[in-house]
Image (cartoon, rainbow, N blue to C red; front, top):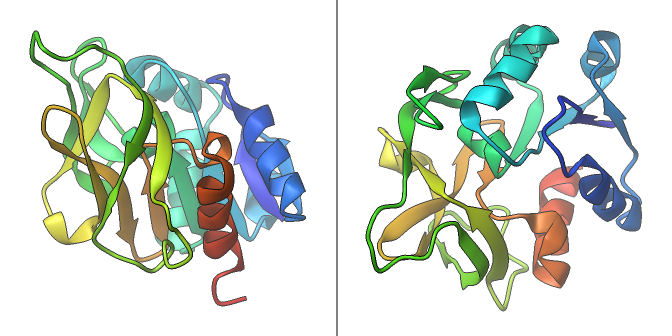
Amino acid sequence: MVAIIDYGMGNVASVQKALNFLKIENKITSNHEEIKNAHSLILPGVGSFMQGMKNLSERGLDEILTEEVMINKKKFLGICLGMQLIMENGNEPMRCSGLGWIKGSVVKFEGNHLRIPHMGWNDINIVNNEFYNQNDPKDFYFIHSYYVVPENKEVIAATAFYGLDFVASINYRNIFTTQFHPEKSQAAGLNVLKSFFLHGA
């Protein structure tokens, strides 16, 4: 069973709809026991980094997720805000600590020539093909004002361009994240979800 973590930061229903379509058993939950019993975890989310961390902390989800992902090495997918929250710190709306699973920060797009948030369809440049081998075209749906900057560039699985090259995906051990929304990216996104959750099964 895949646990879709419900911490009050949106888009859990669309993630569940995509998994249901792929016939991947799942449950939307914030229950600690159900999270412990799941074989894989998804942390979705849209909104502010600081509010996301506050919501996780209030539910004790920061600790249980860290235990399950970093100690028990459970498969983990972070989507959009869920990708950003695993970094050491964020800046939305001000500097604050994240889960700290990956060294690095979350920073805002800057430049008068850029419309923020970055919203719409973008091609990605694949660096690590492990979960993208079925993807052609490589066009995915983004909506975000901030992007992650990991210290270790070897964790980068894909990049995209919006005024600059930014990290679109991370792949590190049992952790896989996407800045784009695979659940809203039609066939390309479904292929990524299918590849990740059925990979090695």
